Image (cartoon, rainbow, N blue to C red; front, side, top):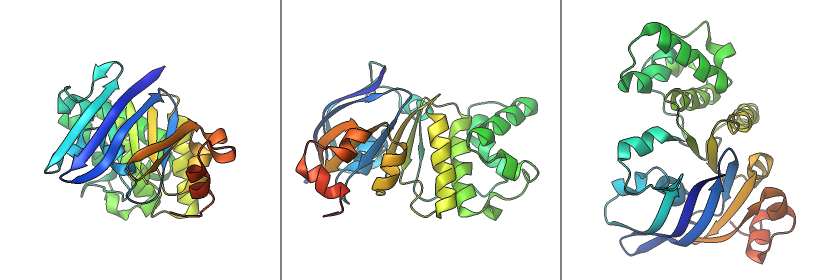
Amino acid sequence: MVKFTVTDLSVHFGPTKALKKVTLDIEAHSILSVIGPSNSGKTTFLRMLNRLNELESAVHIDGTVLIDGQDLLILPVEEVRRRIGMVFALPLPLPLSIFDNVAYGVRMHGEKKISRLQEIVETALQKAYLWEEVKDRLQESAFKLSGGQQQRLCIARTLAVEPEVILFDEPCSGLDPISTAKVEEAMLKLKEQYTIILVTNNVKQAARVGDTTAFFLMGELIEIGKTDKIFTVPSDNRTDGYIRGKFG
């Protein structure tokens, strides 16, 4: 089942063309890995999916983005941000306890019942593979967690509000290999319930977790396909060159 249908999507920031007529479908309950060198349009594409580009000045958007057949660009922004969560490269815990970090968004949506909040927090931390490490420390400051734990806390905070889609923008760029493996393990499990789009500069990570991989270059979608095909017999020589590290 298709979750997103993107057609002729172009994004300009003033005279800068960040995306040029990108067309692709994103399957539900799968992981799309988005790869490409710096300034290829990867993050601009990701930010289009939850309308963050609209916060920039002088942005101009053409084309269509549909989510479940609905026009994403005319849906209320609050609905878009509820349905589509985002995890950024650097973990950004709030200056609150571990419990209150996870419960924050749920409380903002009006949930006050403590028993319900406890249930939601525990479930979200379990899905983020963090519960066993913090279940006896829930009232401690989130800043006492390691970098990898903070990133999984941010994943739990996103999951707590029950989105349909999770966007990951280089979530492991500052993490050690063990923490990276835990985040990847969480992603692979989460795709059973969510649609995941992962922007990564680590082509090995893209190959490990992606069901489908899209290669962007200078704002253009060069190629998209099943990950095993993209990494073994890509259709475009530029894709092959990037994966082999000839540029980037």
